[in-house]
Image (tube, rainbow, N blue to C red; front, side, top):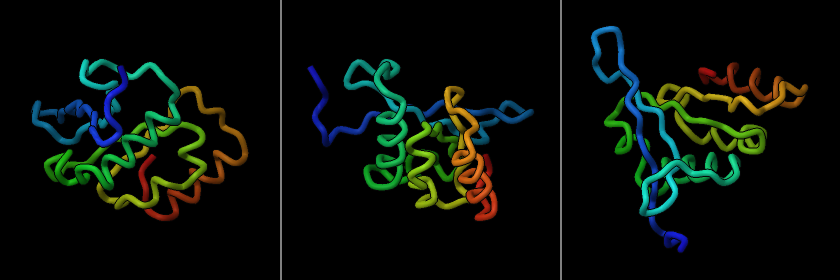
Length: 118
């Protein structure tokens, strides 16, 4: 049974610094009430994390004011949706299955010029 569309399912995995203090969080989409890793398409998972971070809960709430690491699928990267987030508040992670096509490289360069860490 699918979770209701208005329910937010995002996990935050802490990223620790050299003192073992939480420095940032990686935000991950989770599959419904079971709170298990989402096994569907990467585009849907990337888009849901972005939309939940922006609209559903707010990035500040999800990260306690720390930087957020966000996985981007090919389609979400090329949509430029991540540019709606504050460049100082996020680190964009390109999923390992994204091919370094000319379009992907151009988008990464564009995001870097606008201050995003990749």
